[in-house]
Each structure stands twice: as C-alpha cells, then as structure tokens.
Image 1 (cartoon, rainbow, N blue to C red):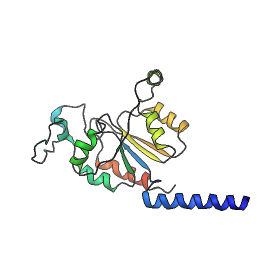
Image 2 (image 1 turned 45 degrees about the horizontal axis):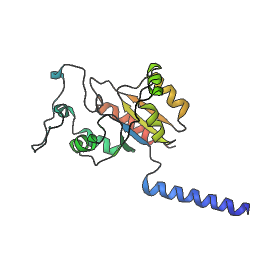
Image 3 (image 1 turned 180 degrees about the vertical axis):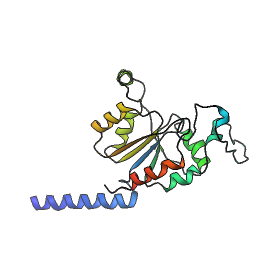
Image 4 (image 1 turned 60 degrees about the vertical axis):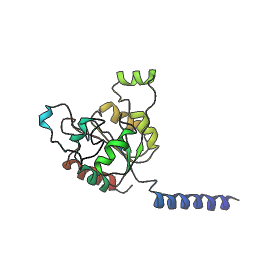
Length: 193
C-alpha cells in the first residue's frame, strides 16, 4: 500500500506541475499599486508630464490625474514575467480606468479587509494595512509588491510570515515607476525558483 500512496503522490505532483505549466499557477505574482506608482504625486502639478487621453466619451471622467499615467508603462508591465494583481484603493476601477489606459487586459483585484483592531495595532507598529492581505493572497507563491508606502516593518513582517521569496519594491511617489525600475523587477521575476 505504501507504494501506491507514493505513486499517488507522484501523480498529484505531476498534475500540479502540468497545471502550473498550463495556467501559470506558479508564476510570481506582481502586486501593483496605482497612486504614487503609476500616478506620480506630491510635487508641483506642472512637474509631471501629461499624457492626454484618446478622444472619447469618458476619456478622463473619473479622475483628471489619469493624464499622469504614461501609456507606455503598459507594454513594459506586459513584458514582466508575473501575474498582475491590482493592490490599490482604486479596486475595480483599476480595471475600468487604469488598465485600458495602459492597454492591459483586466487583472485580479485584491480585496481589502474591513478595518479592525489588529489593523490599528499594525499601523502603530508601522505595518502597512495592505501587507497582511498581500501575503495571504500570495499563499507562499513568489511575489513582487510595488508600492510607494512600503517600509521596514512590512519587509520584516513578510520575511517572518511568507513562505516563498518576495521583493518589496518601493518607489518614490513624486516620480512613480519609471523605465529604470523595470530591469530590476524583470530580473527578480525571471529568477529560477
């Protein structure tokens, strides 16, 4: 009987490997914020390049700051070897307004938990309110988290509570994600695991 169990385990592993190859289930996750990452802010409004939208009925109806999104970022993001997950307060509007501006298909949107006492305690300790939800969603899968509010407490918490590799990549919200950031992200995402 033990031999049958081993073969069963091998079949399960083979099936998991097959599913991973077909679905990308083991590709690293790319958790991406919007404000401060794709939409720079914090400096003088005149310091940001403007990328006017294509003419259309709702070109910028939701938020005039969308002009700060460089549509060229979409091609760079699409080339990264990871599964995009929106990790932003834009929630579903990231798929409605941001993804089309970037020429990207809709992606998973991370749901945020309701505020709680533990979140208040985390905040006092310096832990970002997104950190626990990101680690829970990753469930051991390798991930990159790109945000403008990542701190030392987040890095320590992820190191202590996440089983897989993780890269917490902080960008300056005044400039956001720029072309020079992509080689480091791409190298990490393509690293064999």
